Image (cartoon, rainbow, N blue to C red):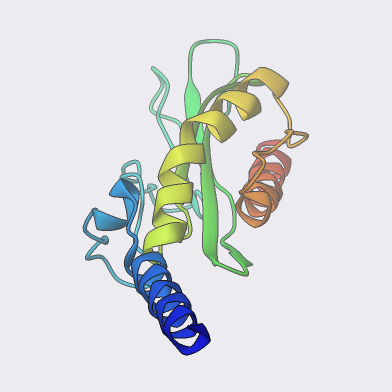
Length: 164
């Protein structure tokens, strides 16, 4: 009697193990991004005119590069690429005077399916936090600690470059 029970227990355990290993969530079934190692998650703004040293800027009515004055001129500034455990993070800010009016992630980790899912999930939250804080002191997103820290670091560097 015992050998028969043992065989049944082993068979059911093996079946449960096979089912567990083959389990896929709906999110796992989505195709992985086909982009390269450090693909741009969001489209970058137009390139800078010569002499703006890595940042892009609009021009005011006099044709001079935007200085971020309160006259409606705005400028965009790219933060540095911050390498994190899961991939690069880079932020671009748009400033009008001393106010941050836009924050866009130029790069977020997307080297594997899970990183790409996390990046797409947290991008809007991090941007909203940055706009609300008007500084690099953002809360970040639970479950995306490395991405949040890289985002805050690139954001703060862009703010420093803008003089904010």
